[in-house]
Length: 405
Image (cartoon, rainbow, N blue to C red):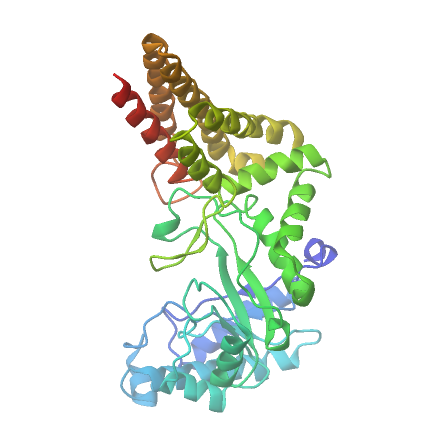
């Protein structure tokens, strides 16, 4: 707690009892507050009782049905309100120096009024902070209007639990999410009680995105994602500008932020993507000019991992990003071989073209074998870098080579 406080972090102890608690059993409530008391005795002053990702279509004990009625939205809310109010009023308010109790409600990611929200709005102690993830579990945006609506639904300013840069759902498999915070409207500070990040499994690699989230939460009206992204890169680079340049190259290759739907709320590779699109457009009319323009880009990508490994002081970040750095270095090599193959095609050197195409294919095969470390993440599979742009480049070179044979 002392270390957290020294870094302007409020350490919060959370217990999620929803999957097992019998709300009507005083012994269960006493066991919960007893656990909170043990942490209070160690110096903790902030507590959370999350009730998310549980079913309100069944009870954990027959006594709850007798007290609250058949399972459903309203009865679940009544049981939860009783528990939360008891903890707030009989534990939190009676302990010196505590902060208001926090909770994540079972309905945490929409703007639909329901019997559940109506009960919380009417009867939940106004001191309890209610967390909300936005209009979905991973929302494409959070606007002032949405935050106002959520606050009206829950009867208080909501506390945004932003599921970024978390990478534990299907569409994030194989990814680091490094893009600067975005699509959160200036002025949210007037409608929220706070914002907190849900980071990646790779906690040190999360620092780039979390840095920018902290920047936004400190001063949302003055937030500039470009400036903040640069400052995050400089911070990770220990202030060295060239290393920060390499950090930002790496960020661009790992920029995509998916939602639970088909759309991404942050695009992949907003710098590299247009360059590769422009390459193929120029290639149709002036192949050599296109190759000249892309050659330094390939060099920059290939050199970025070594620059990070030699210049970033945070060894834990480098550990978390290790396999993506390996893939990035190889992608730089694949780009160089691909460009060499295209150059050989223009020169009419069929042997060199085949040799470079085979080298490119060999590197691409090595990249495909780089997988997420199973000790770091439950999701298995290959790491993903600047997709689909780099894969499309390799496919494009193959197409040109096949057509030249």
